Every structure is written in structure tokens, then in C-alpha cells.
Image 1 (spheres, rainbow, N blue to C red):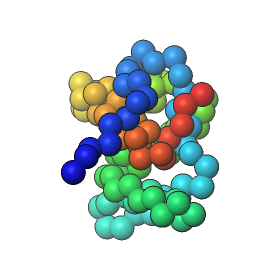
Image 2: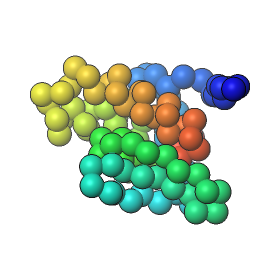
Image 3: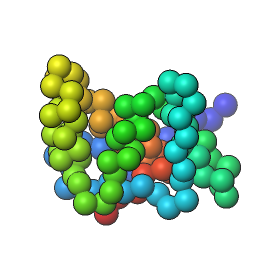
Length: 102
């Protein structure tokens, strides 16, 4: 089976682009899982609450670095892991079509 590989550049902490939620996506929480879906495109992305929070922070105004900084303030005990996690989540959400870049 062929695997789809994104042609988009990898998300980096010092990325000057700003992520924004793609139009039409909705967020639903089911127990501990977060589901992002686009009803018209039948696209579904499964993530956890942290991934859902990152998506909610994608407003087109905040940079990746600002999102990481905000999360480090909220979760200081996890600060050493947050940058890598945010980069990974944004990459997954971009690949799934739930995040666009300005």
C-alpha cells in the first residue's frame, strides 16, 4: 500500500508562519479522545486533549513559538517536552488538513 507523504515543509519551533484552523473543521471530545472532523469532506482526525488544545490555539495570530510559550506557562512541569510535541501535533494536523498556514 502506498503511503501518502506531505509535501509541506516540516513544522519547526522557529517557524515564521502562523497556523490557523482550516475552515469547516469541528472539534468533539469523546471521553479522553478529541476528534476533529470536516463534515463536508468526511475527514476525521483523532488526537488527545493536548492535540485539541494546540488546534484551538491555532488562530492565525500566534506563531508556533508563541503557542509553545503559552503552553509552557500553563504546564511548566512538561516544558521540556512541549516544543517537540507541538511541532509533531501541528505536522499531523497540517497533514490531515485541519491546520493551514499564514
